[in-house]
Amino acid sequence: MTTSPPTVLQEADADANRQLTTLEGWRRFIDGPPKPPVLLAPGDLRRLSPDERVRYDDSRLDHHARLRVVSTSFVEKTVICGRRLVLLNRHTISARRGLIVSGLPGTGKTSAITQLGRSHELLDRARHPNVPDRIPVLYITVPPAATPRMVAAEFARFLGLPVRARSNMTDIIEAVVGVCTDTRVGLVLVDEIHNISQTTRSGAEVSDTLKYFSERIPATFIYAGIDIENSELLAGVRGAQIAGRFTLVPTRPFPYGDEWKGLVATMEQTLLLHDHPPGSLVKLDRYLYNRTVGMIGALSHAIRGAAIDAILSGTERITEGMLRAIPLDHAAETPTPPPTKAGRR
Image (cartoon, rainbow, N blue to C red):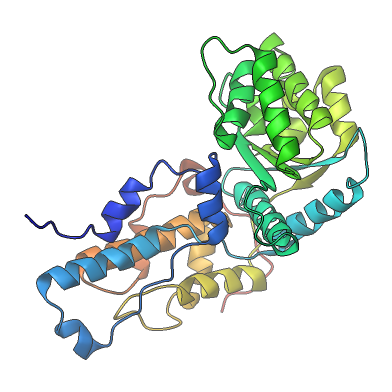
């Protein structure tokens, strides 16, 4: 009995557990997304069988479903700041300096630190070709209501180390530190850092655990979270220690201007739709700005969502009405956008 080959979306479902917080998922991210499908000419499209058309549309749907990182001035600034700290920390024995990326949700914090991690790892691979046992970057997220053991377990999970019920904190930490040292981890990315509060006992203990990891692992630590400069992470004596060692890079919504227009144009160039007039999305850049309040996350969601609807509905183009039908996050839907200096076109 023969079975049909899996569709692109079925393969994507099978990969769902390969997240950035695992070494396998991180390496897949470093290797980059698969090559985009080729947009067929009208004649070739008509010659497809029904099954071939389903697979072809599946590949385009998967293409638009993937969150592609657009290089922005903020991403570039984060990469430069991070690379500078890695170099400055290269010969530092203790009290290494780190970076905090802080801002509102949807302003590109995770994209920025993961692009920094990707840049660091690709450079490490170029310097040490054919050395597969190196792990240049480690990425974790801080769980809500985290405990020290939970955070230590996140380090172990990324590295593929087993965490048994009987394992105590010392066992986990020593195993993590040993592997990180042996595999030459040089950059540790800690996302969702706003889940740590210095005003609670467990939060203070988590902060101490991260500090201990930073002292034992010869790596540069990068934190990312929401509104860190006003959060409880920087409260008290422990918070003062973090503030004294970490540079803070704030993220903000984009202003309406040339960079915003360039973002829209770049995203439009990635569309694989058969009846989408080139440049029609760029003409809607002011509408998109007002709709998303300059949030790059909301912009990406709106465009990718409308592209998926265009394929599913068979319209094969994005219009203002289709963009308007895509529900965005509450933050993007609620505020009134700030006034722009640019005049109406």
